[in-house]
Length: 185
Image 1 (cartoon, one colour):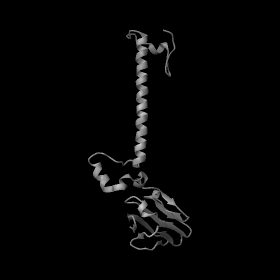
Image 2 (cartoon, helix red, strand yellow):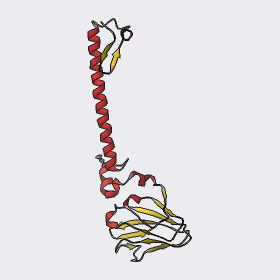
Image 3 (tube, one colour):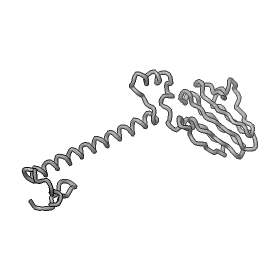
């Protein structure tokens, strides 16, 4: 048999066949190798497809949590509602964001701590109807003056139709409790 022998991207030399004298013919041996390479390529393609599918599922479900079809997952999903699909960073404890300009707080700030260290600032809450159940944000004021947490529209903060004022050194954890109400915890 002439060497080297190439099958796909693989190249074999005479040394590759040393010790395989029990094979009836080198053609049989090459056929077995070709079959194995084909199966390996199919397995690699299946693994790649499974990895892409998993990545899509994680993106949809928000990380380690997910829909879950197990008997114990379904009650959890029913109890938590949209919070069963929260962003994974919010569950791990999102990082602290230093904001020294007035800001529109968003759904993406879920679980985040906002630290303000300078300026006269107003941070505006998002509309409660646009937020998932159990959404919350923590705000800390170190500006040297008052910091205003403004309501979006006609929503209330702790039952009040007024904006929340945080004095220097104070902080508040603000949670959405309904589509029109936030509560300072």
